[in-house]
Image (cartoon, rainbow, N blue to C red; front, side):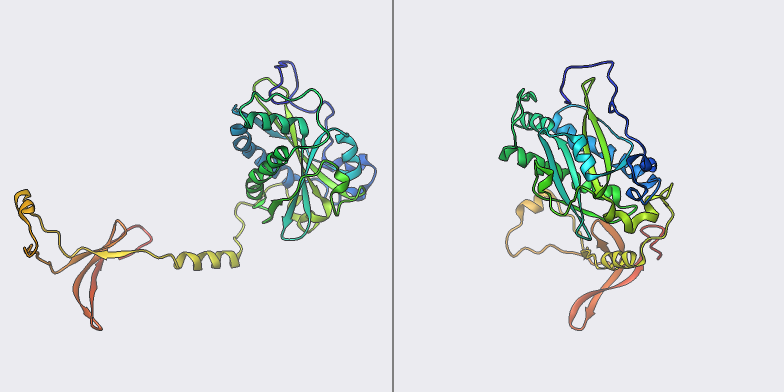
Length: 316
C-alpha cells in the first residue's frame, strides 16, 4: 500500500501492462469497443489524475504522486475476475443526465489504511482483512466518493457535462444493480504513491453504453479549445450577470473638525457642511462619476453629470 516499506527498485506501474483500448480485439470481440482509439478519454484521465493529489495528500499526510494508466475495454465479468475475491470497495456513482452509473473501485487494504490515519494512527492494517467494511470504513469510502466527484465533473467538462453522485458501497459486485457480466466497460486506472513506497490503484469504470452518445468526442485526438460556447449557456450566463446587484452611494459632504470641537460636541450642536455642485457617486469602493443633488417625483435624487472611465470596457 501507500505506506508500505520502501522498494527502491519497484516499477510504479502494474506488473501486467494493460493493452490500449484500440487493441480490444485481443479481448475477443470487435463489438466490445465500438469507439476505436479513445484519445480524448485518455486525455481526460490524465487531467483527472493530477487532481487526485489534492484529494489524497490531506488524508495520507504526505506528498502524493498520481498518474493515469493506459485505459482498456473489458467485459465486466473479466474485470471482476482480474480484481479477485479480496476485500474491495465497489462504489457506484450515478452519472447524470441519464441513469447510467460508473464504478469507483478501491482496494480494501487502502481504505483501512486511510481509516487508521484518519483516527490518528500510522496507517496500520490488520494482517488478515475482514470480510466486509465497518460503518466507519463505509463512511470513509463515501467521503472519498464525494471528494472525487467534483474534480471528476471538472475533468469531463470539455467533453460532457456529467454530474457524479456516489451511492452505497458494495463488497460484492454481483449486488450492483443494472450491471451484467457481459456488459462492456471502459476501465481507467489511476496510480497513487508516496515516497518510495509501493503504489496503490484506484479504478474508475464506465459502461460503454453510457458513453456511446459521446463517441465522436471520445475519439477526437485533440480537445478543441477554440470551440464556440453553447449559445443557451452563454445567454443564461449573461442574463445572470446582468442581474447582479451593486450598492450605489453618494458622498454629500465630508466636513473636517478639530479634536477639540469633536470632544465638545453635545446634542443640539450644528456641524456646518457645504455641498458642492458635483458630488461623487460611488459603486462599492469605486467612483462611478459625479452628479448634482436634487429631487425627482418627491424623492431626493442625484442627476449624473459625468461618468468616470473605470476600465477599457466602460466608456464615459
